[in-house]
Length: 241
Picture (cartoon, rainbow, N blue to C red):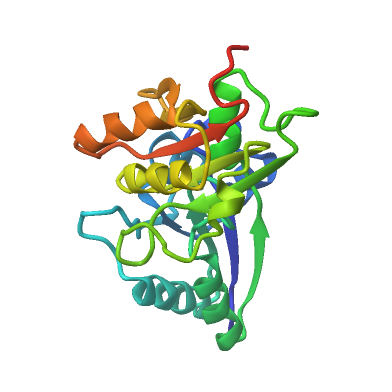
């Protein structure tokens, strides 16, 4: 007997940004394996009596190992359960979806992916700005600011990231942004390039900081990095609506 797994995108944490499909899958689930950032009011949509299992990962804190999470998905589905794997933001955006999908494929378990609102889009909306605009921002690029060791990845395409006609969204990059900014400036990007820091975006304690890449790098070098954030920089990131 084999169940079914729905990879459900929780969005940035605001339950009003859940899709109808996401809410429906939560309402029909026997088991919900959820990320830390997908908890709270989002779980109110889960079926009463469903088994809720926290499998979140947070930098610098005790976290579930990826192998354990994949094993739980397979084991619960093997009982015939309808399983929801609730992922923060969009499930396919820097959420290690590939490993979990591969585990299900190897076990012969069917699955679906329910897309959702990712943090970069929420940050831009909260800041009252578009991610693109004719003539000034022709391209959007999403990157992670941390490798498996939590350091700035060294295989990034630096010339592309320093493109003045692109808007770049940096996920998991507060700790490494000072090093990233130094690289960008070294590639010729102006230190005064607008930047938007969006902390806890889409949640009650959301904080937006409009600044420049140089000033943001200086600020983050002095801060104790705790709250989750996405950073936008480029031609639009600091424009007022």
